[in-house]
Length: 244
Ligand SMILES: Nc1ncnc2c1ncn2[C@@H]1O[C@H](COP(=O)(O)OP(=O)(O)OP(=O)(O)O)[C@@H](O)[C@H]1O
Image (cartoon, rainbow, N blue to C red):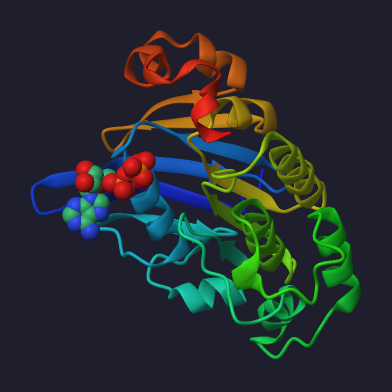
């Protein structure tokens, strides 16, 4: 099996805090993998390491088997890795269509209007291409972030809380779009507090706790894992209604 993205033994310290300690993860092409865990487990720090925003104190990150640990976020983006953030990072003063155009043209790749139109349709944004991104309601803005991240046909997508602030209907659209991207071969890793959403969408789930991988497996195996229930799932609100 040739993995798209691999993390080996990743460690990050903030002073005396071990944010990550010996974390490993492998993503296969076309896989949708969920990363869950309690607040402070290290999920965002791990995303920062994978996307090149933070250099780990230990361990390596590999893209198609090549060590990219010291490569910049821009280098990674050029090599088809894309990430979204917990906080929205859209160009609010540009239209929906121009947000996608920028995502395609920044590396002088040229516009791919067919791709843009397809994504806008998939993301429920057709008809809004002339709208300023800054005026979109939160769920739509999140979908635009996904569309923008996907505009340049990434091989790896790292999505940080993509469903937060979305209605149930928007979450369905999000799930369908992520599935479609994965069917095209893109490997997707998503951090998400809405566990029901993760369990529904992902074929594999990794649980981080206190900076280490506590468990990894199918959604069924993770739900049944006593350690996961004790560390995390037991503390989840019933049916994750807090994120509707
Ligand atoms: N810049 C920083 N300086 C110091 N400590 C930090 C920094 N960033 C994160 N930490 C600490 O590292 C640990 C992991 O934090 P991180 O934000 O990665 O967790 P998380 O799983 O993403 O949490 P959340 O679900 O709340 O977003 C926590 O103990 C946090 O307090």
